[in-house]
Length: 319
Image 1 (cartoon, rainbow, N blue to C red):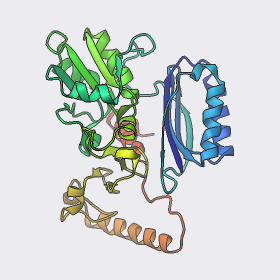
Image 2 (image 1 turned 120 degrees about the vertical axis):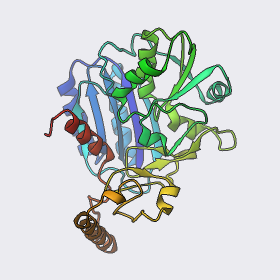
Image 3 (image 1 turned 30 degrees about the horizontal axis):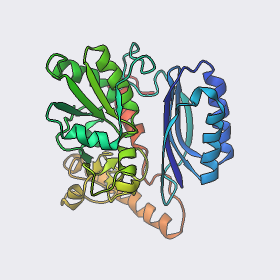
Image 4 (image 1 turned 135 degrees about the horizontal axis):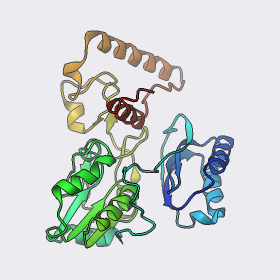
């Protein structure tokens, strides 16, 4: 399967027509994944055959608005998504600050070689703009973890922990680059003078940087069934706990509380006997389906759906 992560900040005023066109093409070519559209642009990750995904990229290339489309390619041995969703949203990456506009101002892009130099500069504050459950799988040495559970918490971290007068040089990174586009625009608007961000994010860094020259430590979490990738964008041994949806490191999987498809060190203590029995039965059904050569769509539920459900619950929206 060819997997492509893409985004572009660009004005979109024909959202429904574009959504319908993209959805029809993806279904025609058997592409699965998620594409988000908003007035500010497009964002998503999709997978399919090489030719199918190319048809999507060609369609976007023919639309003059997407000339600056940023996309990264990798490959997966099996289909990493089970459904295709094309949705209209308020934002393509939710920051919750409508005044932040990366098309008006954005930080300085830095390639992999320049990024290593920034990491070595003692005057630079390096910030991982991802959420804590992503950071714990891997990050760059010395990077600050904002300890966020969603990107919308990032502005509060900036206001609480950073000072333009004190932190004059800031370098940020994220998975594919999109969160840093907004984060750098936010920080420039808040008065920070020198704001850098890694072009193409961790994924491009891992794709283009040889392991011997890399400063990356650990795995890079991705929002699909590969769970995490490493240099060359090769899938790693990281897994996700089905019960609590936490991505698990090798140490987590070696813990006595880890039971595949049932529990992990982060949730085992709170698991009821009934829930444990149900999860074990599900695991048994998965094994039977695999033995028959069948695809079981409940193999790994999309992590992003759980995170969205948690946010809806916090704000009292249980739809």
